[in-house]
Length: 157
Image (cartoon, rainbow, N blue to C red; front, side):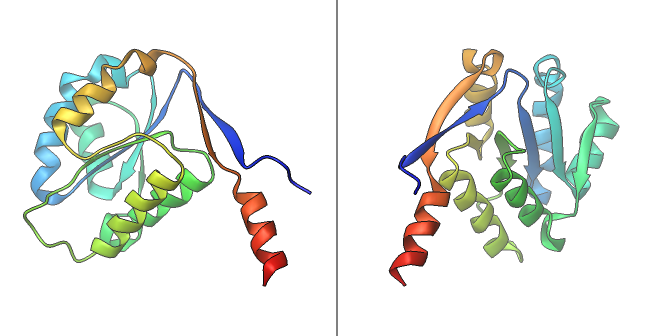
């Protein structure tokens, strides 16, 4: 029987960072990446479709690309969070334009919260996160022991 209600997750010194932007925010994210290129070079980067390609083309940073957001890229990023393969999300979202894949975006934001990973939706928040001293160190945090939770739920049904 699993005893601990929480487990400790560790973000290593080299972080796995997902970079995402809605269409109206892509240029803002490109500028942000250029501004923080020296820090971003120290980490492993991924992103959704067009955004990943644009960052690589405009900055030279290697960014592993997943599908475009509306074609499942947000869900792919969410799955990587669950697998423990993404430590942080920088998502310049557009609050003034309706998005056809809004349920996928909400699911991504929810899973990031469930796994207690840093997520920045604005330039100001991204600036604070990327310049934090924690970016240069190992960081441990506790999340719910999902295996215990599932086991207890299965026994109660």
